Length: 276
Image (cartoon, rainbow, N blue to C red; front, top):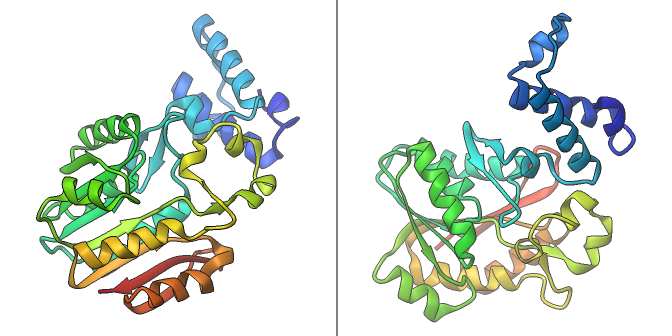
């Protein structure tokens, strides 16, 4: 399996995949692989490993192949209806938590996808009231399952983040202490730099924006923040590393205060924070 994967991936990537797959399919944890212990594969296991190897060598992401990913201490179901949560989004959750210490907060996650942000925040802030919205009913169905399996309290609703009437109808009279989002922000012209595992499999509507209006979702989010954040409320979002200055300029121009661009663990502009 490793030999086949190394024809497509780096040796390190192939090793990580092999360890994950053998633990998932055969119940063999990595330490047993390293210890040199052997056991004969059962017929069903061998067949499943063969099919998984075929999918992985076709560039299908490991998360979709296994049907789940580990995110901020939670196992989350994923499929091609939702993005696979990234480490940067775990950092976004951590930054929000740094601002929210055990209070009974009202939190809104916009464009929730798999529900990763909403579920992680609800798990760490059990006294908070978390609402999550997305325009995809299929994504929301998965997010609901993830919340249920994680044993967390999240309210879900279908709404278009760019449609003011749609959002206001769904949210009713609610106002929030925190609005957080990981919206689409990759420009169409940047698609050529991305791997086939992303471009061929992950939902384009959750990734890409037109070059002519790369910040359209941030325009909608800031307008939503003006309507729905309480005074002093916190706005946090993940951003395109190449558009940090432009994003901050937009957010300031639309009236939020204390606008700050923050970097991820790799040193890239990745998050924007502001206050209403």
